[in-house]
View 1 (cartoon, rainbow over the protein chains, first blue to last red):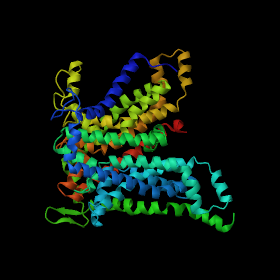
View 2: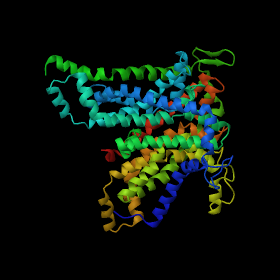
View 3: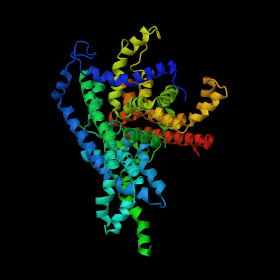
View 4: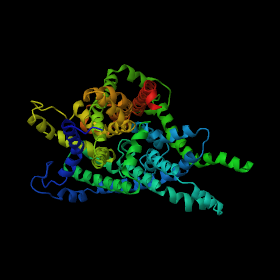
Length: 269
Length: 291
């Protein structure tokens, strides 16, 4: 195969700079010592990170986001793991239709989901509640939880299971002692990817959140609508750091390239 | 296998998927159906939502030029974003694919990583870079001699397209990347040994083979851009509305839910038709590539 010429490398360099620039600029401005938006030219300061402490609504929103992401990803797995096992192992009528239904939240615009859930939960008397947020997030993270579990279940060596059955292991024991440990890396990665999706969602959540159940992206969005100051950059820098940690967890357990390739592949319908 | 065991294995997949199926019917399909119904309800400033069946909202959307303009803007932005990602993302994927192993995976991570970083944070980055008429982007472009006078990016469609293209770029690179993995590098060598120049190779060998990847990437980028919320809301401000931000306004500011539901339903139906239609076209056109 031929190598890249100088023109290609210049294009590549500019491309990468443009891709990284907005993220980098947010993280840099977060360290500004000034009272206004500026790049930190006179040394770095943690001033704006300390300022976050004076805004309890951001702290509260952070805990809401964290709890919501952790809990909804876990609940999604409770539904997704059995479904993934069924889809991976059985050929039954309606299998393709079921898989399509379970992946459909990827195709439906989140603004439409937000409106549908707002209408639904308001008429159910759950408008603005944390429970409503959990259920809504379970639906939007479900495809990610399902897909990574499915990949693990499809690639699993089933002879170990057969050995366990021949030794007398039944239903629940078989699942808990043999199947689950074998698919666990996929399940944990599914949880992490689902967590990131939940933690980052704005479009759907902005319809459902009420004061008290606002998530961090919603709080940040509402704040940016009024004014942009270094405070939101320091909050954003924290969000970026948290996402990066989850990414590292994903990379350890699963390999980031596989996660990302899967993401592109299936959104590609 | 005994009769009982056979029967059990026929029922097992349904037993395993039943909880998820009930969840999806109960809290996805029913709410979606309720939204479509809501778009046929009446609404008044003082009476609120009235559960009757009328076509008032649909009639308003069809006749008031404001909505035609807004939908046209939404799709115009989505089309320009798609073009921009295809024009820049496809060559970048090709360049990436020709890199050495270690660099390849490093840059792939740098380009795809932003996919998982909060859209609010990424758009905020663009708002900082645009920052009025003397923002960093304008200063750079002017000192490089690309432009003479600053381009307004904030609160304009130009800014929305640039920021959206950045947000969507990983999807395009991924999609073209996937197509490139199926490409046999020997064909390129064969063309070269037969005397084809670099331009001919790209035009006659590479382009036709990665086209399905570009097109399926384009479908993803288009449908996500047309329904994007955070980026148009932050970069576009309060006046420059697209479908998603208008629906948000109707629901949370004007409180005219039935009209907002009609806008959302129309967006959903239009996107499903466009995505399914273009998928079918691409599959027919490139049937041999997908086989």
